[in-house]
Image (cartoon, rainbow, N blue to C red; front, side, top):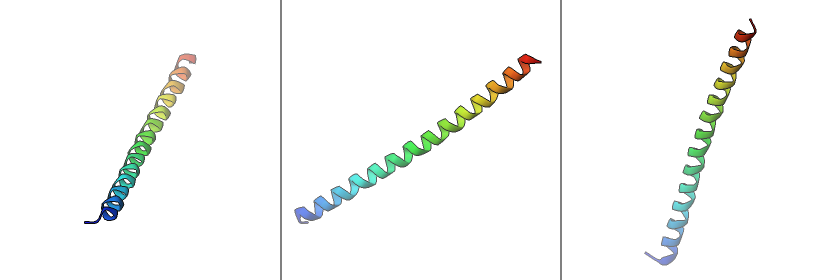
Length: 52
């Protein structure tokens, strides 16, 4: 293979890796946001129960 072919293949591999990592981080962020909302709902319901 020519060196330009290897360069293009390496470039594609790097971009695929970056895209995969970005997808991984976005899914992790979504799960963290859902967990935070759950904790906030639990905190609100606890404070309402304490007021009663």
